Image (cartoon, rainbow, N blue to C red):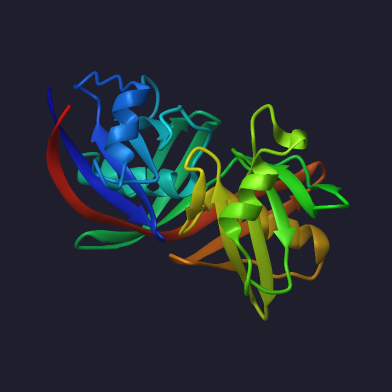
Length: 267
């Protein structure tokens, strides 16, 4: 079977995109592993299917690089909006379904193969301090995917993969695992490095992780102004949010989405 694919990236978080509205492609773990493999396949942090929806513009189905269907991916959500526009859904404002529910998105700017997309995220109940005194102290929250945010003094000498993997597989998160975000506050920016479950590696950016970092700092600093600027290894993102009675609402993730290339692959 030969299949057409597209490669997209958002702040360095890269995805294989497939228009599945008429294709009916159902990937298994083995195929997903090969497609996302950076040596023997296309190479990506994950794979996203653009699918039909009976009520809204489309449905997003996301798979991690390890072959398992994943939870919400913020940068992937922004990228699929740009992919949907390039695939014939000629709009600037979208409403679509994902695994964590309904999302709205707006394409703010576009030129050639890239755009700026602002994506509405789910409301977040709250931020919970959690940790093991002998290994880590952080804040846990679910922004569509579960995240632990750990503030560090410096990234110098920090082994993100080793430390992230240790926390991700620790007894406290052994059932489902957790994404681990190490952050450092510098002036009006939050610098972030993320170990992502499912990818089982550090990624150049993480959308739901950036939201988690921003909300954690909002929790710690009442005077923080929005939008909150996030600096990941792969680029910059912005997070907008408002405090609500039970947590945080009106949360938006803004940043670049870019079409990199297209191709065909034999499965």
